[in-house]
Image 1 (spheres, helix red, strand yellow):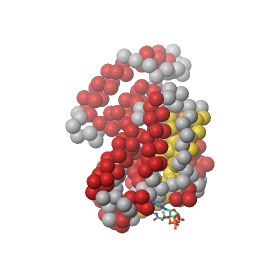
Image 2 (cartoon, protein in one colour):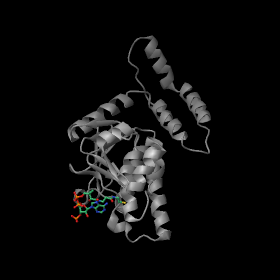
Image 3 (cartoon, protein in one colour):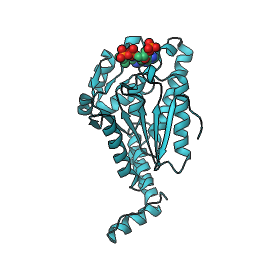
Image 4 (cartoon, helix red, strand yellow):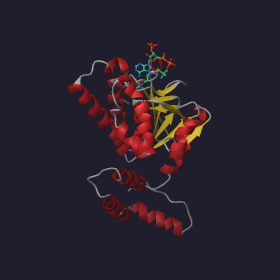
Length: 261
Ligand code: COA
């Protein structure tokens, strides 16, 4: 496996756990880390043995405390745009991946950390997690897709409030708002819950799971007709071997053995 300096990668029974590993900087996302996330996610696309992903942060204190403020302090109008577009591209790779990706949020998920969690398909948090987009306190706005995804996840009014005040919210509040899917008591439970969700999702037909991701994402692509995307995806599922297997297994009253074909 490729060497990573800021990530720790562990592959276990097809589940790749990607740990952002800069705990002395609360796992802040410097550009090198963003590029390593790109490489790690590209590997998820390419490697057939990987069926699902957990993204988490090293240590007990933070998932990711944002973009690296020291690094971004040098941005100007030109490279600021590139910075934003590059991060958006990497996080879109996560969002559009056909394999399930869960953010296991163990502490601060601020700025780019909240944006990273929101790019994942599901969020499982520890009770001490804190979510927020504090960028306005630094004179900037969320630039890795946060203005869009926070609004999609929790609605315009609350998203505007959080992004205009820069306030962070507790894991329980995040769950109430629909930002966190689950809140657990500690990191062990968070990882166990994430693994259990992935076990369930990866027992389903992989092509169909991937199509669900495509179709739900299509809701937010304004140049795409999501109903058309759904009909196309449904048709693709109908020509798959897994569709024959799933329906046959039901009729024969046995568990389905999906191959992702
Ligand atoms: N970028 C760069 N370094 C960061 C960072 C970030 N986003 N967040 C934390 N760090 C570093 C701190 O500078 C500190 O490093 P040092 O020991 O070399 O000085 C270390 O991580 C620990 O952080 P510290 O602030 O001492 O921890 P704390 O428990 O007192 O506070 C936070 C935790 C998360 C409240 C605080 O670190 C914070 O507000 N971070 C910035 C959050 C933010 O604005 N994110 C959006 C960025 S766009």
